[in-house]
Length: 274
Image (tube, rainbow, N blue to C red; front, side, top):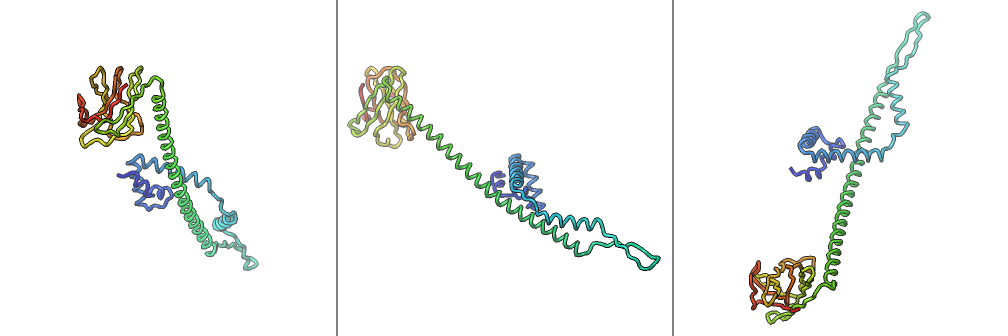
């Protein structure tokens, strides 16, 4: 069962307001027993309705209440009249409530019931609008919080990258384009103390199908695998590569997807010495 769809259908609100017929009421009770989420939502709706009703409750006009109570007293306590027909004959006669009074009382009751029903519908409509506005505000608040969190993450990332780039312990190695790609350019940031290596791609053409860029560290004249450049773009401008304690140069070649144990020299795009 789609719980969210049922909650949005309005059956729970209708049940809480007494607007459902008997079959719908039984269905709501049955489903609430089967799904605790529905019961929890119904409890929340009833609590909100109670709060809303108390907050907006209005007393009935005093003259209407007084008129109804007068009619009820007239029914419960019939007036007794004494009639004298002759000198020696006296008897009592109870005056029964008139049909007009009964009809007036019924009409008043029906009127109050109708007014109460109309009030319930109006309150439900206002509550529904308020609930929708609350949902919209909560959604907007969540989006704002998420955007703030994302912006904070990006700012922390930029701060961390600036610390790496500006650190006096970091050696910057500019890798310029080779014959295969003279316009290409990339920068390596290498911290000899921590052995960390980062690369910033300035300009590289998209790799060919089935190919991927691989970084190499030239150590004692031998190329050593320094890691693969990711195919997907990232929020970070610096890419963490493999650590190296020693190196005389760095280079990037285009290799088969996943990398190669040795570089393809004909596919070298950029290179830079220390």
